[in-house]
Amino acid sequence: MSEPGGIHIADYDPSWPQQAATAIDALRAAAPGLFLEIEHIGSTAVPGLAAKPVIDLMAAVHDLAHAAPHQAALSDLGFHPHDNGMTDRLLYVRAEDRVRSHILHVVTLESWPTRNQRIFRDYLCAHPEDATRYAQLKRAIVAAGTGPAEYARAKTVLVQELTDRARSQLGLPSVPVWEK
Image (cartoon, rainbow, N blue to C red; front, top):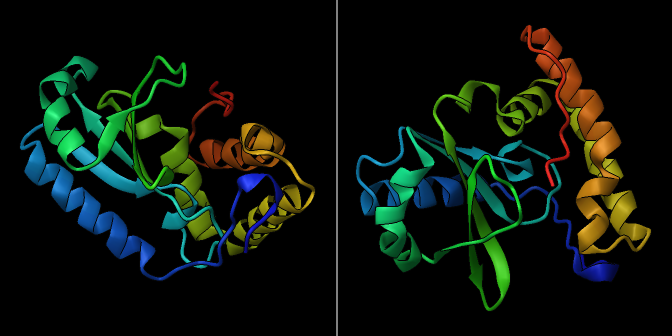
């Protein structure tokens, strides 16, 4: 479904997990030993959830500086550095014909267990009724004509509510989900 503002929300595609697995295998092969952990995150990682058809991955390294020597190998796979102002991670975007297909978030291993994206994904997988609420909100935001620059912020209230609930269940304090 094409929406105003250039955002596309697609029904769940059962090929998304395999697309993520293929990218993960390629990243591990291209940068052996760099990634200590790597997972499929984001809405495409939640079975049944409507999503922007972009495969989000999160990878952990000991130190963000360790990624620099692997820049060429990541670029060979189509993952190019993207600066969006976040200082707690490295971000790489893979696009085909200027359309994003994958986003790779590289974070420290130390921060891995408390990363909101992983916690939120796991919560949505375990709570389908909240995943449905999230999908409905995303579709409503796009149907209202919200543009790409405002889309993430427009989801913040619900994402914060659900992430707070998930973090509380894990014994973790609330932290802001909005990162830009």
